Length: 355
Ligand code: NAI
Ligand code: MG
Image (tube, rainbow, N blue to C red; front, side, top):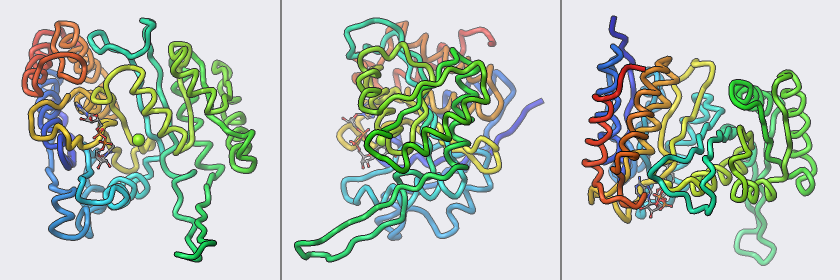
């Protein structure tokens, strides 16, 4: 029996227009093998839409997205529009409205993608970033504009509920893996919010006897991520700290073009959003050079979230095999175009046995 999932697709700007169609071909191919089908609604939202309408998505944009089970997004951002407009006009409203309070980013070395680190130890860790509150708050303001005493204040907001649910998600993941949970903190310098974070993470992690929690100051943890990333399993971090650590994580494993991410509403009350870590890469857009792997891997995370673990690992194995067989775009040291790399993945999808 075929199972149909309704997916909103926002290819967005720049290379989003190239990597999203590539990933959709791969998703459809693997779906065919597992009796899954996708019903896509393609939405032309993003910077071009903004230039025509003065906003990133229509008035009823969130309502339209809310009718779908998941959102598959490429990237948004254009040199012609301030980045705060593109981010606060589309991604942040989606994350908040749909209670996507987890941003999950796997950090994993792949054969065929050279890490800039000298060591060849395989890296396999997950970064769980709190995605709804913390440092990304709307509370604050500016005063004395233009005067010498001009001032700006932005409040960090942590709630017990917000920290608890992020910590539960991370501890559960750790329990299903190596059982190591590392919490990023800065409670030596940030003396109100971060000790609260530490306290609530510790209380939550204590409910998981198989999970060993260590709290690390984020500056030391950043060094740890570069020097010995293979000793890390699951990292839980606030919105800002998690954002920075996850870009660092994708950098230590190789190209930013490879890294995937999921913005999850774990209760599945609202759609979750799957997107690569990279942006619209205006410097290479339209040239057929973009690496579609981050988008394809995000598609594998979407399959997993929709309950198709076997299809997800089939897709994951397919791109890992394609890399091993020597395919790879320029950013990972190869010579493949977007099309050629996508074809290599499609071939592996066809060859691999059912998982
Ligand atoms: P970027 O990720 O777009 O590009 C950084 C560098 O990595 C560039 O040299 C680019 O060519 C390369 N790169 C990125 N993805 C690649 C891929 N798939 N294959 C090969 N090379 C790749 O980051 P940048 O330049 O800081 O931002 C460009 C625009 O994207 C900005 O407007 C920014 O706001 C937006 N952006 C959007 C994001 C999103 O939609 N979630 C995330 C990050 C940035
Ligand atoms: Mg970032």
